[in-house]
Length: 221
Image (spheres, rainbow, N blue to C red):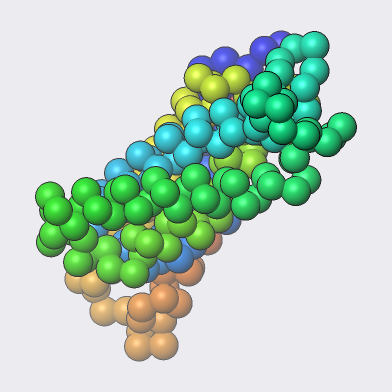
């Protein structure tokens, strides 16, 4: 059965949420969720970067890293450059993915600095950290090796959609955590649990709640 849009959306947002199911991207998840406005800004930035990074890395994987096959041709080979029998997957995959993500993050950083300086200052160090956000890197890897066609991964349009849904799932987790932390700020939390301890406990309870979505409608992440 071919993977479809509904399956990808439910799987990426609920069943295999990058934060609450795969436990990726904890730095911005805990660092930026003290205020709802900051969570929204970071969430939108991650959605943007995940979507474009998924499409770009899939194009790089299919057209530059994989060897030439009857199904497609490596563009480097068309340019007369040598292409190993196994392609450049094992050599350049990680480096090329990180470079693509870094360029996109730099673009987002410049846009926010120019158009929304208050949000840029609020996000602080966590914005450039999107470059090394394992959730963004994780969705790029999943798109190209963890699906029903491990040789080619998802096609570009489905990879971009999966990145978009993965970003929405990340943003959903951040908004839920932000709403919880804003409510907790109004209550008398024991001193030993204030700050990150109560945030970790809340995240654990949220992760347990999201386990209820496992195999929703027969879909697995």
